[in-house]
Structure formats: C-alpha cells, structure tokens
Image 1: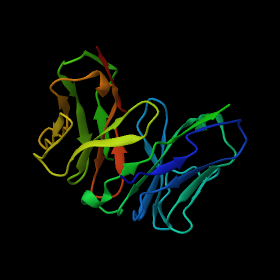
Image 2 (image 1 turned 90 degrees about the vertical axis):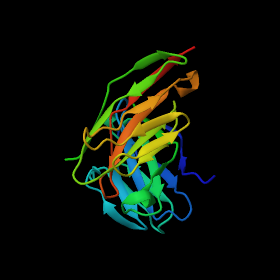
Image 3 (image 1 turned 45 degrees about the vertical axis):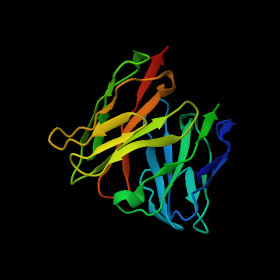
Image 4 (image 1 turned 90 degrees about the horizontal axis):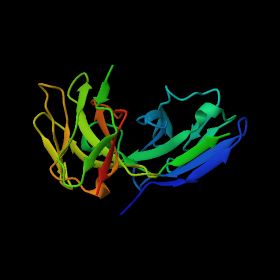
Length: 117
Length: 111
C-alpha cells in the first residue's frame, strides 16, 4: 500500500541552527500539505502545494520557515534559525487533488519530531 | 471561522467498555467530517468519514453519524480493546482543501 514518506523521523537541534525535513507524497498525488502539531494539540496547516505551486502559506512563519516542491513531487520544509518554540511534530500529507469531496482525502506520513534545545 | 470542538481527555476505560468521544463543529456550508487516529510516535490515520448529513461512517467497529441538526459527529465503539489506546482527532473540511482539526482526545484502555 502506498504511503507518504518522511525523513528524518526524529531531529534534535540547538536553537539558531538550521533544520530541514523531507517528504515524498503518494505517487500521483498532486497536493501536498505540511502541518505542525504541537504536543497536546491538533495539526495546524503551515503550507499547501498544488503541484509545484504554493496555494496557501498564510500560517507559515516566513521570517524563518520556507518550503519548496520544485518538481511537483517531493518537498522540503526548512527552518532557519530554529527557536525553542519550534519543537513539535511536523506532519506531511498528500491528496489526489486540492478540491472538495473525496478527492481531497488526505493521507499522512509518520511525521518528524523536532526537539530544539 | 470554522472550528471543531472535542471532549477533553484523557478517557480511561476498561476493556470491552462502551466508548463515546464527543465532537461538535462550526462551519459555513456543508462540511465533510472525519475521525483520525494517532498511535504513539506515528502520523494520523483516517479512521472514518462522512460527507453529508445523516451519513454514518464506520470502520474497525467504530462508527460516527453526521448530525446536521446538532452539528455533531460523535465517535462510538461498542467494545473497546487495549489496542484502541491512541489519540483520536475529529476534523472537518468545509468545501475547500483545508482541514480543521480538533485538539484530540486521548483514549487509554485498561486490560
């Protein structure tokens, strides 16, 4: 069964360092999402891609976070510099399309747990 | 704006007990509703969904009915198992791509 792949699974870094997370969506899924999940809370959308284009990055802290999906397949989320408050689980999800209905059912990867010291 | 409210946890039950996790929502239009489950250290897995009023989603013994009149989508299971211990998230998608998640309810089932 196809799955969303993420790496690394765990990352420990010191504040002010740069970190990067990678996501490979399910083959054929045009839409890719990055979420941040703070401990004890639900996921919150950071950025959504439709193919290689950003559709929504309204909740992405653009002073330190960046995301790209250059060829419309895999994606990288970067934080530079990392801050203590960035400690969270970063989840990637994909769907066949970004529209409504069953075609936007989102499939989640296992996540990257980031700890900033 | 759109929102999802879940009952706070943790919920602790004995094996074979009946489970209810309450979820209510606020949304414009006619959202699709979802329950996701998250096991320790893992991502979210879709448990069940309903796309219109009065639909009942079901999977692995869990079920939830989309109640438009009460704006609710409560999760139920007749007999829980230890393996059901996890965090459960209610979510909605109101006609667009965006999912709005509740804060999650932790379930602990004791043998």
